[in-house]
Image (cartoon, rainbow, N blue to C red; front, side, top):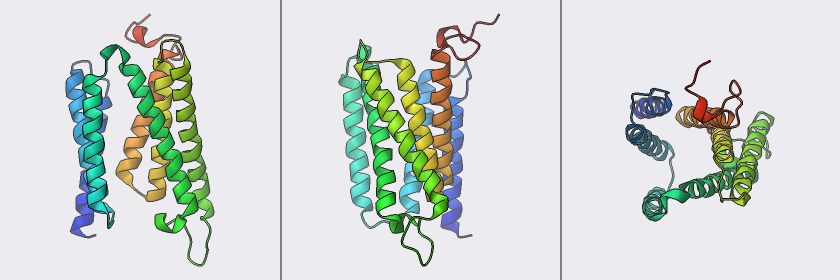
Length: 217
């Protein structure tokens, strides 16, 4: 095992641990600290992903990440706080569309993603199910975001949570295709968190909503 591979595994493990800490239900941890921890995990995982992939256009990718991050930060600061749910719903819908695009790209050019067995020109059978999950979950995320935006008030927390959960599951499925352990863990955590919050908001957990989650019979 090469030192560079060890460094990538270590970075993915640290990022996964940070995401677990950010999502862990500890009442003593402030929300700001959770967001900072999740941001640190995102930065570490992104750096590991870029370093792991031998791409020729890495400067363009890094530049796009910086521009997109700056735009998101500016938009988040200027957007009215009362309408942040709408903004998050739009982003979740875009993330679902991105997963659909990723699945389509893998289907159209499986050689670039290593999804083709030797001597074949089609996607390997074992990868078809994962591609289907990515496309289906991405479509579900887009649909949930669209329904949330069409509702009165322009946003719905339960549908937003469903959309985020779908994006997480799609990301985890796509990570299995890429054999990226860190991305699979992060996607699974996001999917589980979104699904759990949606169940709470819909009253699926003991018949109670999120506001009553701490109440005990």
